[in-house]
Amino acid sequence: MSGRAQLMWDEAVTGYDFGPEHPMDPVRLALTRSLVGALGLDREVEVVAARPAGESTLRLVHREDYIDAVKAASANPGAADGAYGLGTIDDPAFAGMHEVSALIAGQSVGAAEAVWRGDALHAVNFAGGLHHAMPGAASGFCVYNDAALAVARLLELGAERVAYVDVDVHHGDGVQAAFWEDPRVLTVSLHEHPATLFPQTGWPEETGAECAEGSAVNVALPAGTGDAGWVRAFHAVVPEVLADFRPQVLVTQHGADTHFEDPLAHLAVSLDAQRAVQVACHELAHEYAGGRWVALGGGGYAVVEVVPRSWTHLVGIAAGRPVEPETVIPEGWRQEVFARTRQLGPQRMTDGRWPVSWASWEAGYDPADRLDQAVRAARRAAFPLRGLLA
Image (cartoon, rainbow, N blue to C red):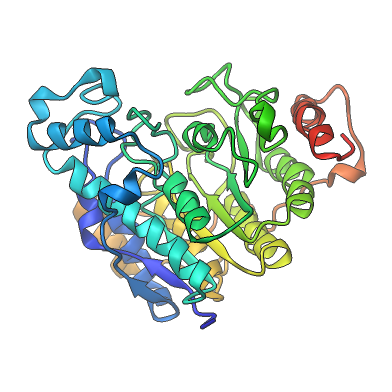
């Protein structure tokens, strides 16, 4: 194994563009790649452009009729079939949609292949993490579910246990659905409570099919959860289930939309807490998965202030050269931000909340605390099914 990290990148992924009024502005990808370069992190990783996912790969998760519908909408956006979730407000059709969606999927599949085969210990595709796409429908800004495809490819290559941990503010519903009946895959999602946020799934009671009970773990957090609660919830659930499951590979999704400035959700997490959980995922990959780590992007709609910094931290951690929070952002990058967006870019790689403080679960459960109630609900629903104490 080379031990060197790979950054999956092809400039063409910025063509994943639902239009100027859509919140998923592809400038967030371009600015992230530019910030990675401005901080010299691209010299610490192998930058690789994988091939687009072919039809046989896409069919590991997606139905053939759905792939055909995406192709048809890609060729003629005006004829998109709403029955497949295409041509909607969330997922408007655009020319070339199939090609660029397959390209993003290919980067995540390529990351999984590199890690499994030992070409890299860690691999990052921050353009990926499109976790809402279902086997037969687009959903929530996601056309092809690259995260589920990466997991499915690992299984095809011979992996017997793959863990998927999702810390996007939205429930990782598409990945959970893809492996609902597969005990070889553990899906863990830490997200805002479904009572207050799309996709209205991810209740603690969702624990997997009868043939795979305990293979899905959902931590549904109250709106307004901030740094201390978010990090506490992560450490109260994720390490224990990973220790029990003993994954051969860890796949993580790092949507940046948990941030307090994100316009589409209601958590109050800082960039510094996001970095703390990225560090924790890296450590957990080494502790429980032999270091094999595939890290993906996801949501994130504060496209200047938050997303590029968050995912640049992720790349730095994977590269073995974590960016110090107090690092001053190069002026050249801030000038690029203004030229592209007419917004002023952030000045430092921190929100000023580092180091993040939080209390461990062992420090005491407060039955009156809404965050602790959410954690307890997740543990009570899933842990006994895995033979763990709730």
